[in-house]
Amino acid sequence: MELYITKNSPFARVVRVLIHELGIQGRVTITLAQTRKENSPYYAINPSGRVPYLICDDGKAFEDSELICEYLCALEKSNLCTFPDGDDGWEARRLHSLCRSHVDGVSVWLREIHRPDDEQSPTIIAHEKDRAARFADLWDKEITGPFIQGPLNRTQITLFCTLDIERLLPEFDWRTDHPNLVKWYEKMASRPSLQSTR
Image (cartoon, rainbow, N blue to C red; front, side, top):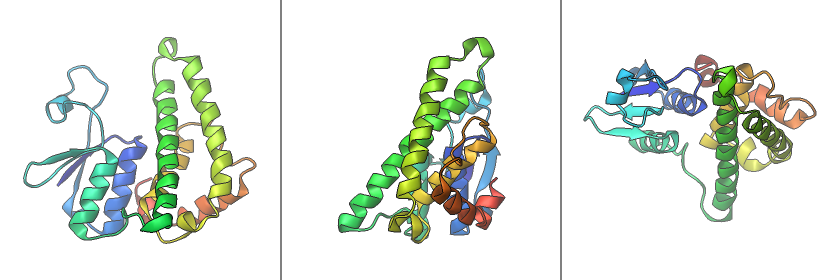
């Protein structure tokens, strides 16, 4: 299989982490895609130009990190992408939805600051910076719950990859006044899958 990524995409990183956790690194070739460039050859491979994009051995292709993760977990018969049953499942889905909203907002912020200075929107940047601060407050409370503290799952992977965008976005300060979140992040950071995809 071949996975198209960009270096800074947290969505692509989530898939790369999952591939490592599933132990299938040797079965997936990682290829850097040239996105947001006029006439990029990547557009002939994936018309949307988005990443991640997985092309399977039979030529079937999947876009979107959620779908790719679910597909790979199904292939490997892994429950990393499976939500629990009953009330626990609804709680897990609630947290995962919040996590997806958080990574979406930080990604918009990251893309915006990489645009030429005269094309950046101060309104968008301020909006996403404020949203990220609210999420940091929320996660510092939610992070102590059993789903986030329990066995590894894709919500944890997605949240870590979101927080780790601080390396690329200096104004993304989620650490100040959020000791529970910092403690969880530092514990997660030791995982080989997260270190190898940094």
